[in-house]
Image (cartoon, rainbow over all chains, first blue to last red; front, side, top):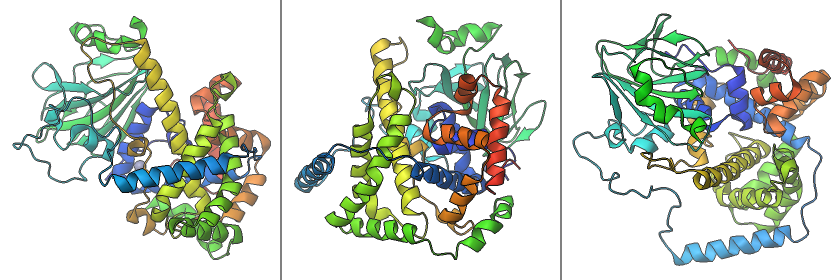
Length: 240
Length: 215
Ligand SMILES: [Zn+2]
């Protein structure tokens, strides 16, 4: 049972479409596991549509519909000619990584949120991981956002995340397994927000590996050896 | 379970037939069957709203003008996706708003990515594109799960009346949230008020509209 949910701020900004992509990805991951919040999003989106309707209309250019119609005709003829249209942006340039390994097949297509499934192609080992110590590894998700880092991290059963604290906010969503920190025990779907200055050391449960998605606001403040390993990534926005 | 608790208002008003909602839904169903005249009627109604929506977004005043592009791209998707429209699950206006919202996000994302790619290439970071489509994150499909949860669509007119009754400072902020593409933190910065104040005004407004608030 999901216990920690995004608050109204995250849900309205998500429904309005203004939530930064990194955080929206976390909300989407939570929604995958939480039908209560999906219902809220549905309502909040309807409210957005009502505001949309109350706008003062602005005239479009006279030939707007004609251009649209021509465009559609063109697209339909080319689609008819080409039975298998190339999906734009569905594949990354690097096709070697896309080669499926047969050893770790996915249990179910719907196990992870849609975006994460797409990213991992059903196998989290297909990602590029960086190990820190024996039980912790992470893989950055490049979203093209300059002020935030988006990361998948994986803790082996019983292992922990190296102690850290940070200047900005951190959102974590549990995707697999569970972990604990000083405050509570967190399960799949939980959406946990840690604000600036808090320091914590998450520990995975003893019986299962834990996979989480995290969105971190820069600047990250780290003050031990861990910092030196992550600095090239976390300091990226200020480096140029 | 708590999701159903603030639905009492919505369930009763579901029975009220909303003529406009039915009209746009029927047109959209005809568009699904490639009816050009129906599509043109929808275009006449919605494209000036999409244009207004585009012009209000942050950055529109800074020379980033994408209003005609947003109209074109949104309406192309309306045409293409019309066969998946289900009037039982969403009203035509909510459905079109969702597509316009996602198309706006997509255009802004493309601009931003273009900018980032031009500005930097980071050694050791070979994946420049996550390969996500906007609908991987802003999910468009209504799922059966929600549909079965007694969460009925709110009556559009009733909601509209409630919106008109909102105190000015609350509707002012909700408009910023929904139309100006500004997040809570951006609004707080712009109005020079604490984030907590923005949050509580939004919460109060949603409360008055009998919409979801924090548990
Ligand atoms: Zn939830």
